[in-house]
Length: 275
Image 1 (cartoon, rainbow, N blue to C red):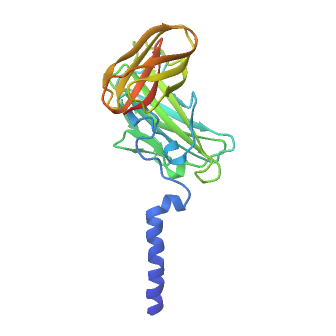
Image 2: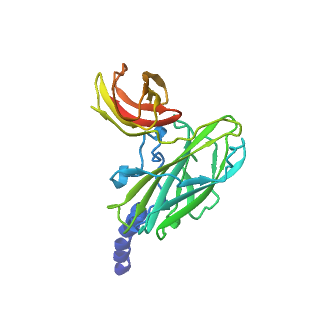
Image 3: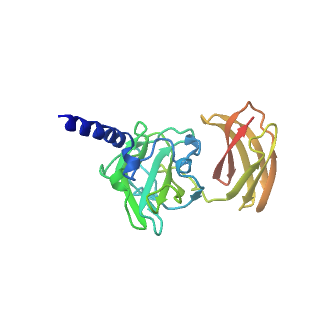
């Protein structure tokens, strides 16, 4: 009887440890936490918060069965997410169709319960532990029902590639898919603004915004809060092609904000901290 009691006492801590830290011990996480897609609504947070390093923007990692003519309200479409990394052996992702304020647009539906799941009040779709392993790439699919009162939707996605089962050396990628309602004339983002930086950041009364402008035309810079509230236009002028530096003087209280830089319907967001 004493031997049985001793063995039970030895096993109990191990069981508790596995229950508490099972995903870490087994080397596979069962999906990401909500709020890490790299979207403005998620404060631009992505996989680098946990895995470190810098995120790389890529195109074409999120695709859909939505026709080129646009989506129909209350219609179901299939969304495909593909993470590609030569040499990668484990892959993860998190995707959410959102407005700039972080509001969920449409309805996410899990079509493969073995490899994907919903988190964050069904706002995010992510991988399951059984949907991690792959060789050079991993593909997941899920369904989406289009909203009935929105003209455009952006699917924001963050992807992570792993090589040896450890967080060190992971690569993080960000990809987006912008889709439009049938009959709505929209222009897809064409990366007309790049290499954005601001100094100083955090800033007090003024700062210099630098970026590369790839198309001669009118450039607008606007200020938004984390809740999507518009705080005013900071710049609105014609700019030529090339490296540009402009002076910004935001007149608002301290906090975290987003700069929206737009040229010919191509927009990019940059987070700033005002002290």
